[in-house]
Amino acid sequence: MATEPGTLTPIERIRPLQGIGGLLGVEFRIWFPLRAAFLVVAGLIVFGVMYAPWSAAPNPSVDPGFGFLFFGFLTTWSAILLISAASLSEGAVLGEINRGTAGWLVAMPIRRASVIVAKFVAAAAAYAVIIVAAGVLPYPILAGAVNRGGTGFRAGDVVEVTQSPIGMWGRFADLPDLGRYLGMLAAIWATVVFVIAVMMLLGTVLRSRTAVFGLGMVLVGAIVVSAIVGGTSVSATPAGAVRAVLQIAWGNDVALLMPILSSLLLSIVVLGAAVWFFDRRELA
Amino acid sequence: MGGVPVTAAIETRSLRKRYRRIEALRGVDFEVPEGSVCGFLGPNGAGKSTTMEILMGLIGPSGGWASILGDDLDGDGLRSRSRIGYLPQDPSFFPRVKVRGIVRFVARRYLDGPSAALDGKVDETLDLVGLTDLADRRVKALSGGELRRLGIAQAIIGDPELLILDEPSVGLDPEGRHQVLTLLDRLKEHMTIFYSSHILDDVERIADHIVVIDRGEIVEQGPMDRYLGGRGVYQVALAGGNGDGVLRSLEREPWVDAVTPLGGREWRIETPDRTIAESRLMRVLVARDGVRVVSLRPAYRSLEDLYMELVGGLDGD
Image 1 (tube, rainbow over the protein chains, first blue to last red):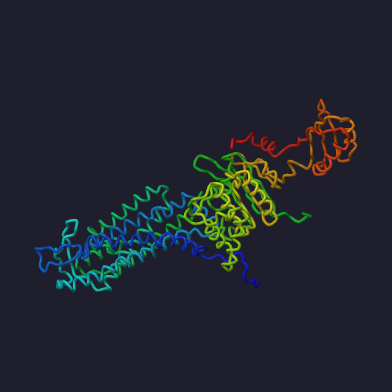
Image 2 (image 1 turned 60 degrees about the vertical axis):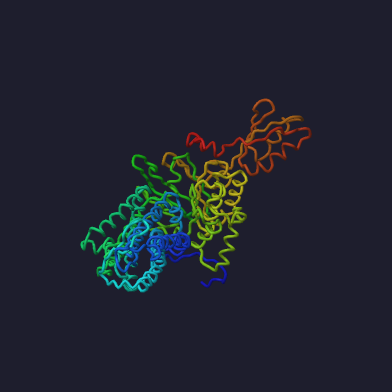
């Protein structure tokens, strides 16, 4: 039946992810601009204050006496991103359930899966923007510093060259090319995405936000520790993605694709479990 | 209904809900006829909200069966939910979003069409519930009564066929309560309304059907007329003039069943039809010179009387 222009008609088509459009709009407004901007600025401050060429003091015992804390920046920033992902996703599902807004949403013609998927997609997209925005800017600064300083280091050269403001000597390996650097950022993002998916799952299963947060922190700790001590046995896991980033920053040549793909695949499996549990969760 | 079968907007059979050791619903059976305004009554903890939450798919039943607008609860219920407006007992919305934004968000879930038409609909609905002045206020800054009005606005914005309201008048001042009742009175022409309330006067005023639940079981259900009937019983006190003459002439009226003296100058008048009685009684009483009506009050059974008989008392709120 033709509808008069300008009139409203009831929505009758039911889609697999019914209602996700509106929910994504709401979730994006939670992440953008303030929350995302805060994390970008935090990343840049960490770089600018602790690891940029103008902050890092040269090690007088090492010639040529100029360097930067490329490895230090990536480890610190990865940790900040993982911890922030766990902290900011802690109440995403359980907070909505406890407040009653989850019940309000699913009493409308909105699929329960849409609520979880919208939260996940928005958070994953926000971290992609945050990681690109705060991660790409240091690259030309570091590259410029290498060219100006003329260190002549090759991949694999690991020398203690700088001292950070907190008094730690950093290790330096030559900056990888931009494509590989972006691959490292993708690996960090894939790990963050996995943490977000796990936080969604915990929010659908547990009843205490403290428990969700606590387990999230345990997960982040486990990823970091496994990345450091896990060796090649963790390469097809999110810890393997972090390990690959650190290895490349250290000057070793390791594959990035496998840990990235396996982390994303695991995230999808975990997200599926979150949807399954949320579908059965009582929301009153 | 002229022999046309009345279909049920809501139907439940042996609906049960158990929370560990507590049996919240113990085999609930009831029907809400399509096109009715059905008051859902019961003390606190009787199972009203639990029943509504099961109907809305927020919680799952432990057993039994329910159908809402022809859709079994076994399915995802999306098709029926697109035809239902719901106000929970404690409505909760995105706290940082403005009132207009919430209503618009809900409208988009139910209605398709150009933005201008949608905005017009949102404005119209906000006006209907008296929230026009607060349209640009954030939800977190609303009072309890304002939040409930917003809850009603978002429940009706999609032009639902069925409106499920859990205590719509709670937290409203007398004016707000009056507005809600007037609104429901207007909406009942277009949709089935199923609402729970502790305010029995409100239910008596607009409901044409009641379901009473107590301790997780339905104790009574049916059309309001079946319980309260159309029969009118009044108690009248007269002063001055020839009161006995007035009452004798009243006895002769075809719409009066009985006139019983109660002592002093008070009488009890029984009529088979309350509507006719209320339009004619006062006219007959004041028709004689010198007779003054000191008091005239209904003495028939109210919904509160019925409720007290069924449930054994109000629960204090």
